[in-house]
Length: 396
Image (cartoon, rainbow, N blue to C red):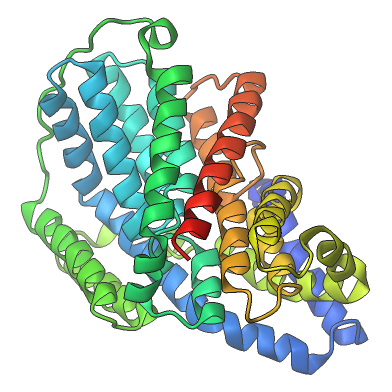
């Protein structure tokens, strides 16, 4: 028993505590049962999607899809750091957009860190690429970020309409991020080497699993773009890959594939944040955000979302801001989304993705200079949010 308790991390205790607090709020009436039921009904489809897409991504990694692609990018770069930079930023952006920001932070980061010693590449530039683009590239599709799923329902846009509205802001956000990555982490004076050594190709252990996982990911993206409900699309793709592993390698089908920690965390948040809003948080957010849907209101919403994200995490920041923005102010709501998606690059706890990324860097013994991380992240957040909201307003 004692050994089991020792295996529960501080973050796990926080997750359990958050859910327990939410249950207590409902039991004591601080959060009315009807409001709690509405919150759970709202997030139930999102939890299905989140659980399925994480299982899909985990098994795709086990099938070596990410390893093969990352290594191939390094080979294609032929020792040129600038070429590798373009390829890695494109890969990290694509994974974030189609498989969720947590996939980039949790699964792509260890792949990139494993690539570094094989190609004699400095690990920090690769790590920072996944950390920043996991957040700043997460605006395009509803599946890219849980906050997008919430916003899509609020502004009544389907997947294609959401992408049509957000493609230009996403492009600007990625370009600004690339500029900051190159100046502060990738240029010669920062990385310390002129060229890198292209690694040998990865030997795929099971080509059947590799093929099934790769095709499942492609079909998943095609399905959501075709308008299939995202939870259903993720579940079907995940089941197909699970079936392939059940046939070829059952040892990889372990209970830890299920992201129960993330599901507990999200459920707790959606009980605690409405309660805090009833106890005064909504008044504070309304004073900061305002009710104007024009340029001033959009920038205030984005700034409030970014600031609160770096204090308490981006998901509760979005939920708190959403509750005080009038339903008709679509651009202001999307600006809040910009703030909560792009802003959490300043503090390690700004988003769950950033928090998990730090854990991978610790495991990989990659030293992240915290002062530089905070200062460069603050600069990136300010520049990217300002440019992205400007484009959002210009394309409204």
